[in-house]
Length: 259
Ligand SMILES: C[S@@+](CC[C@H](N)C(=O)[O-])C[C@H]1O[C@@H](n2cnc3c(N)ncnc32)[C@H](O)[C@@H]1O
Image 1 (cartoon, rainbow, N blue to C red):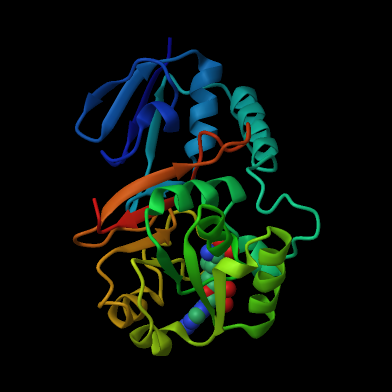
Image 2: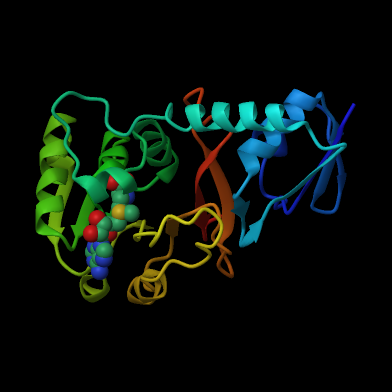
């Protein structure tokens, strides 16, 4: 059977979720297993051009799978990528193009909300409201800040669709300027990720300025791309999708200073 080696897997990721549930032998950040040629090709297709924690995955298969198998695995991976955990599911919820690209899937946003354990959450970059609504549905009061007035209007309408308008205060402002005047139990930051490069997005442009502006918050959570390199003092946690197409895919990494 072919031997699959996957290098560059951070130790804070559940490898059995990311790779597969079978046996893997570990040597540092390299995981090794014997798999059928089809399984090996599938792993190669799934992890291709991906990385985590600021490093690309290094996948090697010995012997390498034959070309038709590689092609079939890549086609299947492309098909899977279209079947992902949905954003909003309630009829009437609306997003614009960027809001759709950035939207946290509803199920994950609600799970984040349930973990928040906070009376008041400040969501400094609310977008169309994916996270703000997740926190509010979990019972938190939310202050949702968004720079783009049109997008904030969509967030407001989406909160109405989800029946949580009374728990969210909407603020149209530059969070970098406004955060100093806001307080809460948890600051949530989901700044734009920049270009959607699946390996090279190791930094998030606005993040330093937001962290500085929100330095008076005791608890801070930051949603970053899987490829993000990390922040000193913050634990990293990988959040996977739920749909058949993305349940082995890391949708985002949550950085937490409240480990
Ligand atoms: C990644 S999206 C947030 C997505 C949101 N968490 C969700 O799940 O729907 C980031 C948002 O930050 C907004 N933004 C960018 N710069 C900002 C700033 N200085 N202050 C407030 N919001 C900002 C963008 O307009 C964008 O809508």
